[in-house]
Length: 519
Image (cartoon, rainbow, N blue to C red; front, side):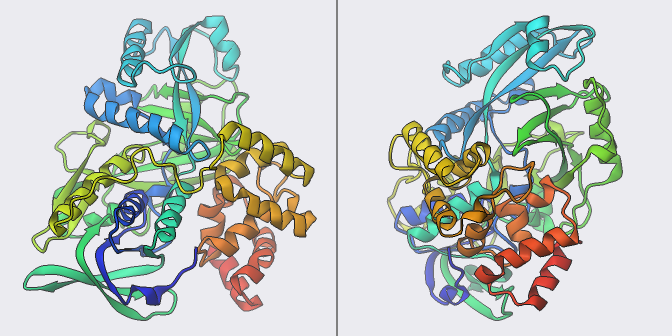
């Protein structure tokens, strides 16, 4: 993946502005259908909402309470397909749901809901089908939850991903089929002829140059920045969600819980050897460019978790955190939790198509609808090219056999077993290129931090091959060390020095990157 801003000086069938999950799927689908495509992103790939999710590919069990069966069915269908076409990128994850004497949803209601969830998923087999457990069995699976007044519980299947790397893989796939994809390329204005969009003026965030990108059709997948205009504010409602990163819990399964304070659903999710705790869901009217985690939000999540944990978490246990904004469809609902997560495609007066709302899980199918619209407007008769198509980095051979062979090779190279497992998920078939780095420099097989499953060779590979422009790109989205660990200036300097040869950074540039990353 190489960045080439000058390649935007061309004529395109489609210009997509916004490099999150919707922009990435749209560009990938369109180029596979034969369109000449440009994709620009004002920051780094997946640098906003699409790296701030709960990292789940799921149907949305809680949406059954609002009778949003159509959305749940669509998401469950996409979940099953993604597990098939991208086993390296999307993997099964079971969730436990405890039932206490004072739980808002009792045994019968949960049983009915989970049965419906399985039905909407097409009666899946293991590991997705739900199971019921008596008190002792459930407590044994989740020993960190208090068992006073516990009546039993259920487990059910959904799936997990690394959201930022999912976006990156799709961008890489689009580039591989001829699309021009440039990060740090800011949309300055839409260009029009006779009141209709004909492209955009885009500024290079690295060199400062501007270029007029000519395009027959334009799509804005700007996420929360849709609400930066009066028109956009009429279309969408912004909701803020935060997650906390906490120490690992003694279980490989996630937990779905409801807060005692207001009955909202939240999760405890294992991820890269840590626990994600989230999320909040509150209306947001602040600055879109400066979304931060507030102290009261931290206290809200910790209190919600501590109502269930045998050993309470405190602020001192919080390793990292992140906040993101959801741009949902406009709604009169009193609380954003009641607003549908389904999406809409709006058309501005100048012809630009704007994406409003949506979910990580169902973004592929929604992007297919976007490209269908684009193709119809261009007079092209094409069909979706991403349905059941393996993701770009999925191994060609049987996935189980490939995993076994790659694990054996990695361990011969001195890479520890846990790091190997995550390495294969992060890179798919490209993991062999990380192995070659270890062969050339064996000491790079060592972990970056002893308690996280990342090796130095992985970081070097990402720096050299994944369009990294800043240290924060590398340490937040290519490899999420900034939220999984507390890195001081010394640690940041060491990592910047490690990747400086790949990025062409001199000591002065390294110092600037470390300073910016530590803010």
